[in-house]
Figure 1 (tube, helix red, strand yellow):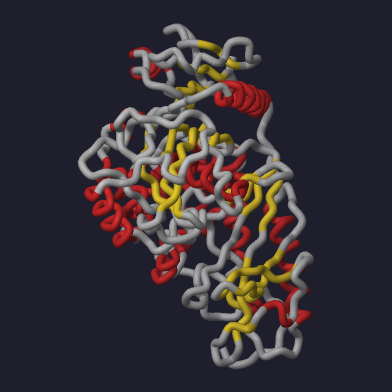
Figure 2 (spheres, one colour):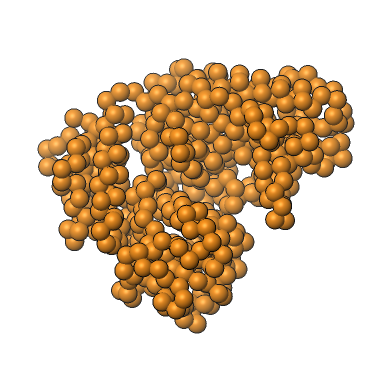
Length: 519
């Protein structure tokens, strides 16, 4: 019977929490069990049974299947991979990355008691060698980390261990009560830790952070593919989330997944001289065709235009709403000497997003990986070469946010408003990837770390080979025939080595009337 969730026992026996949870099988499947459509969850140490390694679980999703591989990487390679994805690291040189997260970020065996407030002298401070390693990583890393700013080891004030289960469940230990905005920091640590594990091909684990006094500067100081559980809170939280995951997985196994798509793509207004015109000059801050805020030099400004169509089940219906809102925005700027530009970075230093909202399906690592391979990879080949400058701060793989109303936001794509063809194709690929993530798991090029290097480094030859593999799998899904008319032009353009044009007024492509000016 497909749709079961198995919790494999770890060698310590500390994570045996599945007993009595409906839909969760406690223990290892027998050698004769059919596991097609099942999930096998590994949270703690312990070898996979030989029957599973030899193909019994070929059509199942094995959480943390790459755990041993990640544990064997060593800190230098682990740090390289994390820095590529936009993280700042301070992993001790020459030591294995896998191990218990401790106060100093090394594998000394010293741990914190659960929920003890640290800082103010209770944590072990880095050694001189650790400081040198941290400075080296800081110099190599981007000036901003996933916590919001560059990491500086001088004056660091706290260490946190984050246990992660999936993409939306984490326990931050201790709570950051000494920081100005503790709930915000807890949320950001949880999401950043899940992303770090995801970037290494993991579904759960433990990440150690050292965070600066302001709470916006942080570096990863330890990482383990295993959940280093502590105290009484985690088992109860894990049981509750296991049940929720089992319910959603079983539901999706019983009936076809049908998602609703939403979006909030951005564009920018430019003067004839090429200067950014604040969108707030013409568009309201709220509403379906409004503007988006960002901080410039510490001041809140509203430079970007943003469309917020109503979600729809069908991509073309959503694309029609987007065109209507573009026409609305054009009407509000009627007579103004402005041009509408979209894409990844039509203005240097001002990257644009084409965030996609998915509801009606659970946020899982498998679904996020399907979106990365079926949406982000093709778009990466179509964007202009200079668009890669925005990475890794913007446009990194696996960028997401859970939404309080349910569903999630996929934040990796740039603004695909450049043309209706690109818009319809992107929405169709997002729909198909969200609904067929299980089938697309059969061949995900970006699971290969060399392909991730190609994604960030711009190795077009490797990316083309990966896109062909994705396209082949997409064509095998039952939904392809429904969206073929919109999907095929995307891959045709890729084969023809074409890139979208970020220099022309997007209203022209959308056939929205406007007073033509210098372009």
